Image 1 (cartoon, one colour):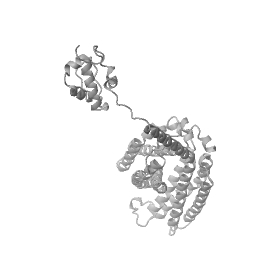
Image 2: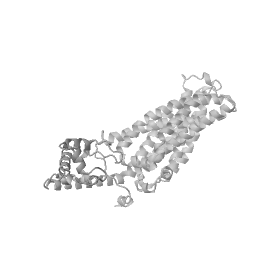
Image 3: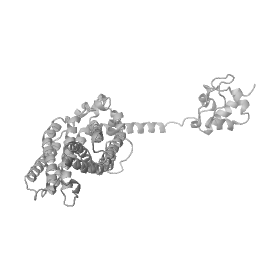
Length: 441
């Protein structure tokens, strides 16, 4: 009763009469895994773009940061391609599992959702322009323009995830759909902004950890970064990861305590606090790494990555647990309405089957389709029956052919619409009726 009361004013559509291509539990596992792989590369793309802007700005004072910025930019263009490709899987899964809620959210955010593809194309072109003009736009106004391009690309790549996040968030709260008037009003539903802050911090932290390993590996070529040592690069990106992860212990509780109650369950609390505990252990390992000398820094990197993986798995599982709980009532009402409709349809078909078949319409009844434009002796929208009978005397098939695909003969009259939907048999009845009624007395 309580769930029904909460959803009493919510749109309850019927479910689609189509079977899922796979069992729901398989699609659920695929959704969680595919989403985590996708969001990893989104994090690296967004976090990398932010670090490119910061390090290029530092490069105006010290050229070595400019070289590092270019090295980071080269990873961004790869990660953004992987983010797009890996986004297909979770998008397909969520379309199948939450079709009605997902497409409803897309429709409510309207133009912003439709703008995602053009915005992504522009952002990607800007990242390539920024990367491939690095060597030629190095001084003066060109350098300022070069930095402006990176800032614009960053702003676009920050805005696009916000559209996705608002849609994902909006689909969880069908009872709030009637309040939405486009994208910006959807930001007021749920806790979009705390979720977005958590996403941004995760993007920078994950990128820092990735770059600590990318530049810290023994096989990496650092000839273009001769002003940095390998241990120094590890320390720089370890620090970024550590201090931004500390911020997550602020954004995390903010996110938790602003979550609407619709999907809060004890299971969710267990997952969140377990993830936070593993995150704290990971943070301690990173700070221990920072205290090591240059010869030993990086020894715990594999363990840090493993622990981060568990934290990310917890986040992905927690999202799904919350989504399932938040939509449980709406999904149940959809199934109930679908069953009611199926039952009513079955009753209707049963009653219809017990009635005698309707008699086929005669020619005079079928002629109602034509009577608005063709009178017996008077020109209305089209010629009268008397004129038609003269043109098609003894040729009812000619009238049928014309009615199936009419052209335009007379400039003073509008073109006749086709009547192929009536079928050739009915059109022949009408043709014979018209020739009979149009015969001269």
